Length: 134
Image (cartoon, rainbow, N blue to C red; front, side, top):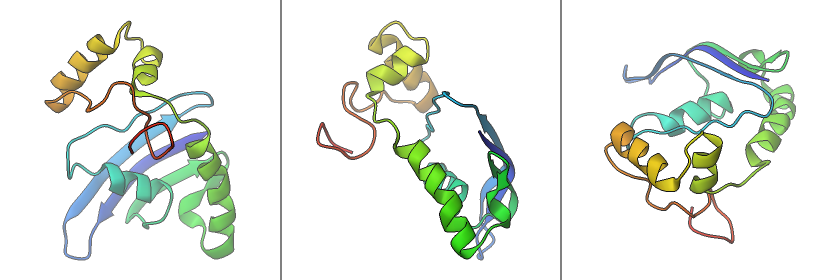
């Protein structure tokens, strides 16, 4: 459903923000983007949603290459992407369960190894909402 290949972004000042990123997400798959401050998570998501235009690569949503669209066609194509991103608000504990970890503490240990720290909260939702902090 979503395929990203060769995605790169170089800022006008020459700084390389993303280099040859690739990702494939099938129907029903859950993906979490993890990384430290300044690692490019937000830049990646802005490129995928085409709120920032990448300097190279392709972003396919179904049979549509978002990198070739502009104006109204891009806005219409983004609607499907927005619905996918907003379809589900889940807790970190649920991400742990869906990722195959039997307990939040096992997931937290993996996060410590990966990020150098544990998730701030293991029961709050990802993103804004009435159930907890963003």
